[in-house]
Image (cartoon, rainbow, N blue to C red; front, side, top):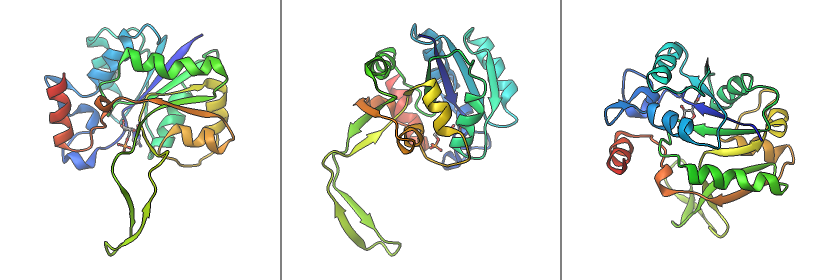
Length: 221
Ligand code: C5P
């Protein structure tokens, strides 16, 4: 099976408070984007990589891929206004003969080969999509705009879902066609009636949102 990865790096990352996009924030010595790019390149599961860069940052992204010797990253496109638009931009670059598409947030740099294998396996058992998730352990409350608690939400069966998310390519292409919005790709496949499975996620797949997250991830390298 031919597996293509879409590496989403087009977010602005405003909460980091930098004058450049999150993908180019420093993680150790390198830009954040270098870590997931290197890991996807080194994964035997992955045949090709499309990098979705912040608009105007395609050239630095291509240069970085070249510096790292990422021969699989032969396509780089500017992202869109929303994550879903960026997914559509990346998907347009995935060759028509790709069987599986793996969508990954560059903001989750510590993707492992083991986890990639875990999300790919159920696709050969009749699932349309597979996402890594961690069971929610905190008590959940819905809170109103005044800070008042509206209700306590039962957490049984609730998972916090991460990336990489794996899909049969034709199912994902059909599901994201149009201009709907969602915060992950699985939501499109679910809405289209597809079967999505959750497998064990990884706490080290923390998404970089704040400078503290970057420091924490750097300490895990
Ligand atoms: O904004 P958020 O943290 O949810 O973004 C998750 C991932 O999606 C990040 O890797 C970010 O670069 C990417 N993204 C994108 N295009 C956007 C917004 C987010 O590629 N317009």
